[in-house]
Image (cartoon, rainbow, N blue to C red; front, side):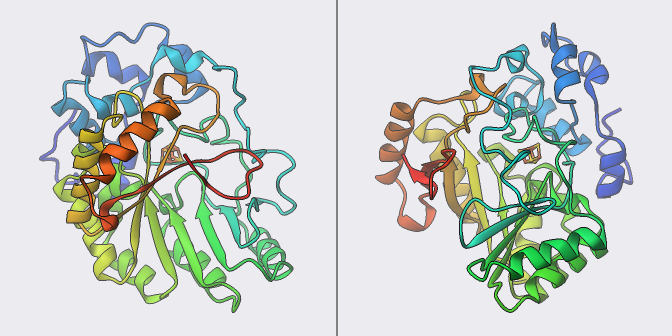
Length: 329
Ligand code: SF4
């Protein structure tokens, strides 16, 4: 079924329509052990675009990218953590679909789905059930909320993945929030340049760039994700005037060595994407097998600091519930 010569291969909507689910995996990766994974799938559905599946096939379903995309029975373990340590689902919001943890920023959930369901996802327990700002009434409420908080100067469109929306919806959302005089930046958190780069079309990149307020934060976690297609997507954004930064997650078995991080960060700089943050795994359930200890993270960071100049060197931080900032490790 994986036909990279298919005439629709570069069409992002075709890619989404043909995303692979759990039932198709055993035939695609016959040597992989999926025992117990149907329970994992019912908790957090498997979804992989044909594009990303092709990358998994190149590593025979066994490398770092496969670890991020294929289900693992360890996802059933809570590790002693809850699905929502930041209170994103209950209590933290006083406006439908809007979260405010820091005085100068508001996060607006605009999409409930992604191009791929990453197995390490921080929001895996919330995707599909979170409040989504999608109607004009919701948007009006979000605007009123922001206007009632003059310290807010940055809006983060998040989800899910905001670039799952159609162009018109994205452009409308950007125009509404960028149009507020108090807003200096509209940040879009998206993994599309990594998992479905065809979604970044010249038209969309041009529209985002013309707002003059849009910043993109993406999430490359391994150098093998920097393909020609991903490079093209980032290039379209950068050349349209959209600053692109990268927020990796430090993941056991994916990028937990200074060599892997060096390759990733230097590769990102080569495609003009700023390596910005490396996050320790959030304290959430179902990702304990990805967790890297703080001691190890400190070692990787200090080894990296002597190999990379400041522009290519990300800050290693952790997101701690209740903290006033992202905390340097
Ligand atoms: S793209 Fe982001 S929000 Fe979506 S599943 Fe992956 S990590 Fe989670």
